[in-house]
Image (cartoon, rainbow, N blue to C red; front, side, top):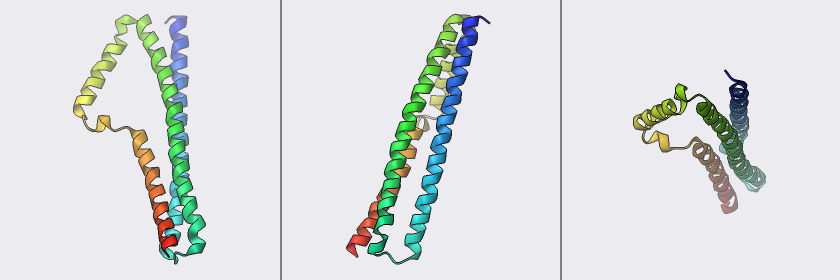
Length: 149
């Protein structure tokens, strides 16, 4: 391998490590939000809902908003890291055209899209954001119940 290829491979590897770290951060924050939300919802299901419960309901909404924003931010970071790895990978493909890297990738992608036509279109980031939106909705539901009295 050439020195350029070695450098590019290290850069690709570093960016892919960063993407894994970003996903790990999302997992950690999401788990925290799940635990906190479950505790609050559990409190509401076992106790009488009254005016004193309002701060918890508001906190539940804040958790959901924070989680959604955090997921969006982490997606932005992941996307940057992945695009850098992709660009450097494309440069490796240019330096080694006989390896047919891009052609093989395109073949696999085409087959994958054919095999999973609906699931392929669903972006994972939307699933995480919807999860946090559900927490927001539950929080507003409890706020409504508290205010309604």
